Length: 76
Image (cartoon, rainbow, N blue to C red; front, side):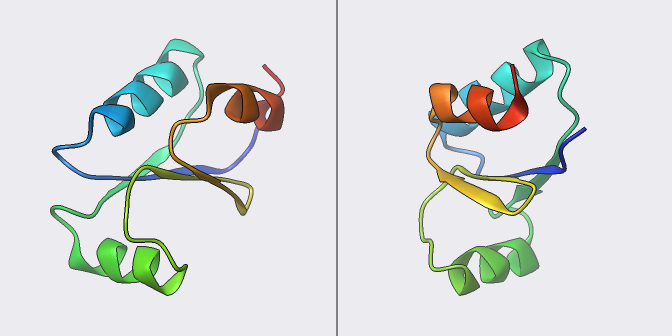
């Protein structure tokens, strides 16, 4: 099973859609909410991103909720 991390915020509809997609497909993931966790915000900025969602699948970055790419990386 892939290691999946979702950087999200409280006000991001695409984050909600991405997390819902993962849950619907029984994919376990770790959420790092930049609205509540300043260290998560710092991590995201060090990766060169200012917006969310950013989804890591085994260190591969997906910026935004790109369902086809996510399906491909997860083998769905």
